[in-house]
Length: 175
Image 1 (spheres, helix red, strand yellow):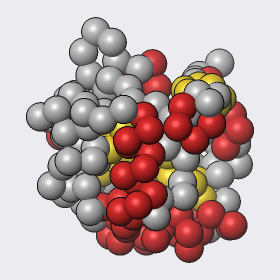
Image 2: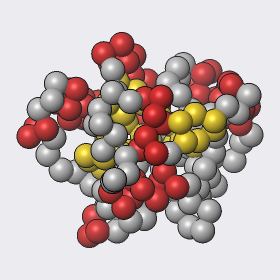
Image 3: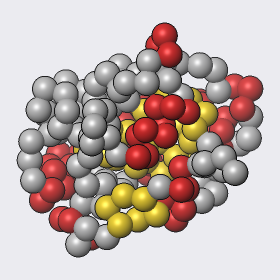
Image 4: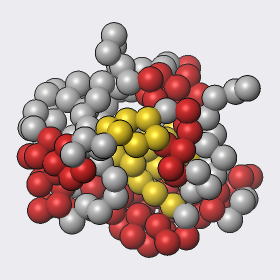
């Protein structure tokens, strides 16, 4: 049987949930946007747009899952408490934020190995090139699209809505 994102789990930030490990199967039936994040990045203001997407759609079966990463210019150096406090204070983030992970290299989280294999980037690269790379996942746990860091959350709304309304032909392709 082919894997889906439901085969993976990750701990939430200790700051918010005592480090509870969450199976992504808890999100079965939802459309997901999985994003590697950082608090000191030029793309950090995207937290506001991600939160806006989440609040507008979470009751309809959509979730944003944030995965802090410190691999790009050491732009996520804080502790889990600091990361959580930053997200709440500056962007009023309410979507799930997981513990800091690696998205590339020898310590890459298995979820990110799967995401990169499922939807490679430009020219087939499996590497995450920077913070705020986004993966859109359908209600069955399949990765259907990858978006680069410069794609703003607001621009994702049509693809998210199409997927939520089961119109995959409208999804297009953006890496």
